[in-house]
Length: 246
Image (cartoon, rainbow, N blue to C red):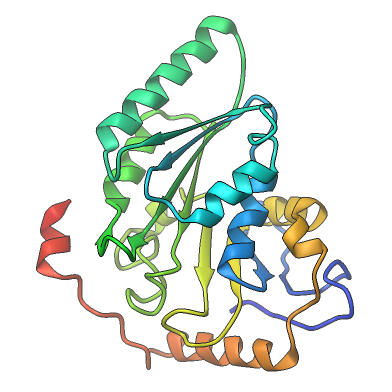
């Protein structure tokens, strides 16, 4: 479970961070809300020259984060693909990788989706998406999944077992988990490798330029996670429509 403390400043050692020694080990960074989490990661991760591909129905916070970052300043490119259309996504990835090879350039491709889209009432084809990214056999494609509407409804989310294998789960670069929906408390976190968390601590403005969570918020989140960990919050079964759709 993530360890959370409340220092005077968000950037003090040990502040709202889950720590570890392995730079590639899963870690977490706590934000005040799911909105600020998405704004923080999407304004920070894409670098000059990178490409962002995201579902056309993705949350407004992703759009706002991209506007605040290098993508919004014209230093990179962002393109949408039709909702849950993996064929279109595959075409966009193939075209960009071919361009990189032809021009002898190197850039990261960030792919952004939500696991469950609340307004549409449907879910992303996570397993097929992970398989698609795996076919390219390159470390240049980073998948970021917003699990805001699946946490506690589908256990720890659709990017975690039993909905995917441990190996598939490890291919997700970043998972946004929120505690203001089904858990009924406040705050959110991004689960990422430790090296990426350290980068956000230094660059994510919604994390740096705000106050730390209150003790009450921290206790509420920790108790919500305890309920999830010990099985009291049983994951609902996948509906027949969802399980047959993909």
